Length: 378
Image (cartoon, rainbow, N blue to C red; front, side):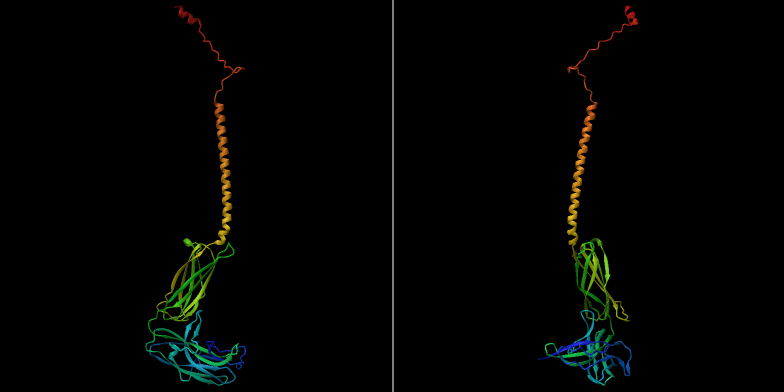
């Protein structure tokens, strides 16, 4: 059974294609089949890292691509251009073989769609790029490709068409109003507790950064987290997203370790856009900020604190009981002391040996002095 599967096994931009690996059961490819693609002039490569242009709508130019055969035998390659896109992880890639370009890849025309290059030789192939009159302002990305189609057998013995591609990037900016902007979408946050109750857990933020403008941009995500009333506030910066083409998006994750489980965490993600390479952006890029909350219940800490708290409560109750007992004993002692003092201050009547009272009358004394007697005689 013959499968016509277009498999882009390598898109090595600005480099030479290595000899492709031989699938199990397939006959080996010719040895040292390698070639390279680079921006060029009529006389050869001129050191440009990519085909970079700034053109008005309706403009046309002619440029050259150098295709070098590093092999020891002649090599026949297909030449074409295609549109670029940003992969989900932030890479630069071209449409798969068989997908028709609709942007800058469709604006490139080669006079020859196939070239045969002698061994260890180079051809400087011309092409034209025509910007449509209704082209939208901003950045348009694509690539010039030199491809080699081969067939091989897969592990089940089926014949598979394999397309080996090597390309050079195209960056075209169409003049007009620029709108550089990034947006954050699908922001999700998850907190995972640690097995060590003395350290915090890990907070993982997953989000998508979309280029909603018309200029290719880089981006720097910054994540900030804080508990209630701003407790435990922390922030961390992620690795820069190197490039997002207009309309493209990148999905990534940003971890933060040592985040305390403060029950309810508030997170804020800010993506700051920046120019790619030596671009000058006017107006400055506009970023985006979004927020999310996540529960971070300290289950392990609570499991440890409950018995500790119960033990402390029992100690406090026991101490209060002892203090109350001491207070009662002191109150009783004070009451007994007052009673003894009161008893000592009260007079006690004397008694006879038989216990009868002996209240004897004391006779009044009559004054019998001579002066008193003389006065009465008179």
